Length: 501
Image (cartoon, rainbow, N blue to C red; front, side):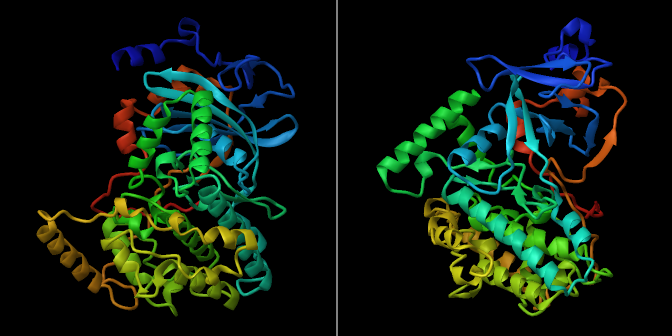
């Protein structure tokens, strides 16, 4: 660490920064060798060219001092409005560009167009520096709806817009899981973007998990073999150890995501995720966006309060228990019948099966089957999506991953389950905890386009060695340490105020 600190604090003329960015330059051009489509160098330019990107539109965002770090710029590239994203990630985690490659090669709809991508640094003390130039996909769901709902909360236009967003996002998430064997794992407000023409794109796949061939749902040897070859080709191209990275991403299933939108099983500590977790996050995004449109805030809106993760899961179990009034507990006191029915159908799909309301069961046993009532989504999914939704393995974690206690620990586990159910019983049908004290609502944001503010910067000194390196935001941890702590903030004893955009 002492050597790293020494290197990244040297002036650029001494160290020779690998991006060659110094004061006075405002543009970058990424250059690849003819025989290498991933490893690149970044040349700083004094003036704009067609294939360069501007560094003037820096997106200011709050970041934590550990783990992943991204610098995002609003720019243009070859005549297109675009975003430049420069990311430091541990080398034992999945490169975002590799995930986009897999999604593109497997024909997944609803992802942004990647205009350019590559690695600027393959391994610097356990971290890689990756660049992505992505098309400008518009604004977040909440921002888009605020601009478009001038006719009121009960208008048919607003209902149609929300249903279009849900339909397109569902198609993308379902195709990604069933066709691309990829789970997004960080579906949040800032990661679903809507263009001015209504085109919906799911962005920020940097926290995605790619399913390895050993865990593939298909029993067809040829399918498994083809998938294994695709993984090997992608790993070779993007210079990472496939088995190490995929194993590490699988281990991060309980950690990755934005807590405000995490599913109940993930908040409760589920070891393995499924497609239903991403769809549940979509439900929370829709309710959060609609709550932003309400004329006044509801005092009983406790569904988005953040506590310890397990307590947050238990509160949500209560908030979702009543099909008639659950939107109120997520800040929605008024909306059209069409939107209310949409929310009810998503709730029924996620939390009701032949046994009844199963949200509390998901805390005790995350492998509880759900997503069985596919017909509830027929108004919000096209024919192809409905067909893909029939792949049951995408919803329920594999039986081998169930958290079943051993014989030796069953007595202790039974006691813990009793305690959990007693806590759940403390949540009445209205979804409100027995206590009259309501903590403040909070949001923890992990995604790269959330809470951004477009500000001009004077010169580009912020992209010097100290600006582009993880050191600028705190001590750089070792890769293994970063992997354990990079994705979510640790639970805090007292709730924090939720930050509004």
